[in-house]
Length: 184
Image (cartoon, rainbow, N blue to C red; front, side):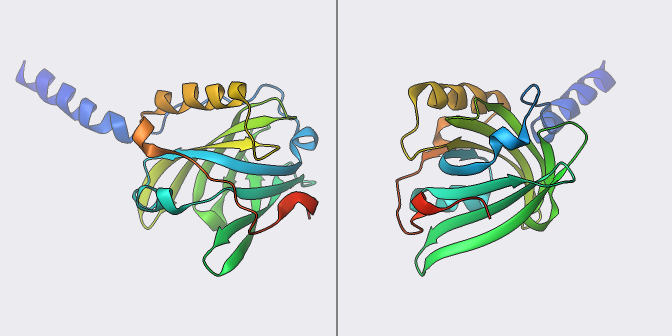
């Protein structure tokens, strides 16, 4: 009996740190996913994110597919000193819509849900400063997210153990003036 209780306690302690099983967008189409996206909301248990989330603004992603089945992603983030830019290669892992991004510490990136024309929900399992964390991002083709997209996002992130106080709706920013950008 004591051994059973010890095993149950250890299982409960381990479970929150285990990576969740997250499904992919069925029949993901990288061509349709390409183009400009705004990151309009995020939820995460990352301590760095939680410390900075109230100071973040909307950022952009200009995405184009690669010949190897991955994605080239050009990111622009408003910062105190102007517009910060980062380019990253999302390397395909197994199924379409499943990636890893070693340069950013993203161990697992999944396109969970998208209609391609207005929104996308992305799951990211990452390592930052030696700690593992989960992040969910809501992408929108415009700075004004639809109620349906917001509902898809808000229905999904709690399934990963993320709470409302770990979520932020990002304020609009024109610091990087993305209106004229295309995927590089």
